[in-house]
Length: 232
Image (cartoon, rainbow, N blue to C red; front, side, top):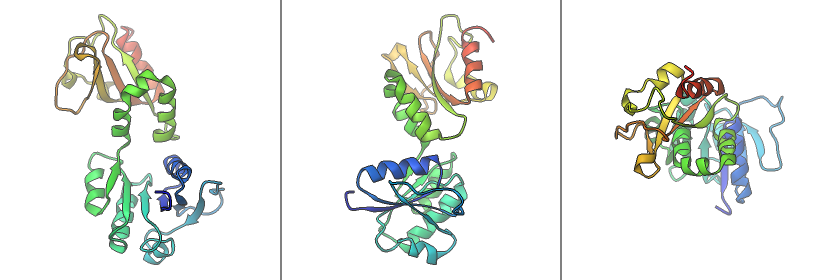
């Protein structure tokens, strides 16, 4: 992608991080949003452009259908991402379009609208679980890049002996409803430390020394940690 030109829509933490990473690889970047210029959006990595995504003329002026090779739809609003993908695909059949998934059915909507691929923050987290567990500093980086300003963290909670969850199946746990966290999966020590997604369809029993991988607010994670330790 040495000579590529990309539009990154979404002047948020993820949009800025993606723009920075692409610029470091030599991609010409324009960070786009419909935000007024009251905030300094410019940086040495990219130029900022205000674009009304409901205007085909403004999208063309930004380069869609001409020099732009890649488009990232990274708004914090699902409808905006889907609309942008739909409009861009109609204007540029060969454009590489990457959308941000914000809900369970968001991926299908984006792909149907014409996205070539979809960024799923939770799936990205899951694929990096082993690296995160082995490198604690990577966990902080992951929080920064994927979750941005939201009060969300990725945590690995070790299951101690005699925990209230020991011996129970993943499908029977009410962790998400009771503690307001998302259970991403489990590192099953009984299977050689292999990581399994909670939605993998394989029901695992929680044993001591397993590791529950969850996403949630810091306060909620601490409540769950205390519960596992027998304090809840």
